[in-house]
Structure formats: structure tokens, C-alpha cells
Image 1 (cartoon, rainbow, N blue to C red):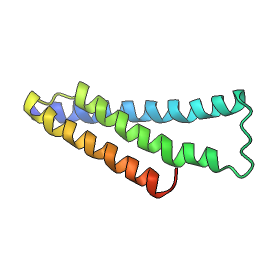
Image 2: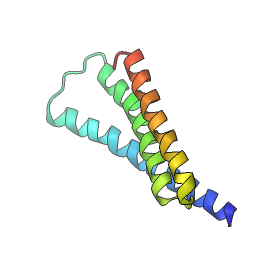
Image 3: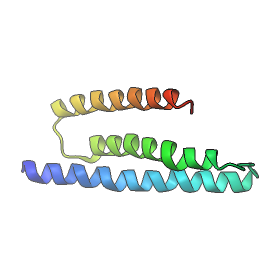
Length: 99
């Protein structure tokens, strides 16, 4: 039973993380095309691909693993605390790089 729970949690994380990354990056591409964003050196596009996309994918994937994984209620509290820790870490990384 525990093995099925782990597999279900991992699959939920992977599917949600990939979907979130694709939505964030394609959303940036669509927005920059629609709003005619001038990105001559490519820094904004690289920030979307290498910073916002992965951080958003990790956070959304962790949330999906929390919601759709098979963890019991007692473990969900620990996972929720881990997600909050990831949010704080992600914000600290973005501040560190000035994004």
C-alpha cells in the first residue's frame, strides 16, 4: 500500500510540475509578444525560463503532490510545512538574484 502511495505522489508531482513549467514559460512568451516587450539582451526571457518557470513548477508540483498524493492527514501537515519552506527558499533565491 505504501508503494502505491509513493508512486501516486511522485506522478502527481511530475505531471503538475511539467504542466506548470510549460504554462509559465508559454504564458511569458505569449504576454511578451502581445505586449511588445522589448527584451534586447534576453534577460527577461531567461528569467522566465531559468528562474520563474522552475520555481513555479516546484511549488505547484509540491502542492499537487500534497493534494493528490496518497498521504495520510498526519503526513500532509508535514508536507504543507515543507511547501511553506520551499516558498520561503524560493523567495530568498529570487531576492538573492535580484529578480
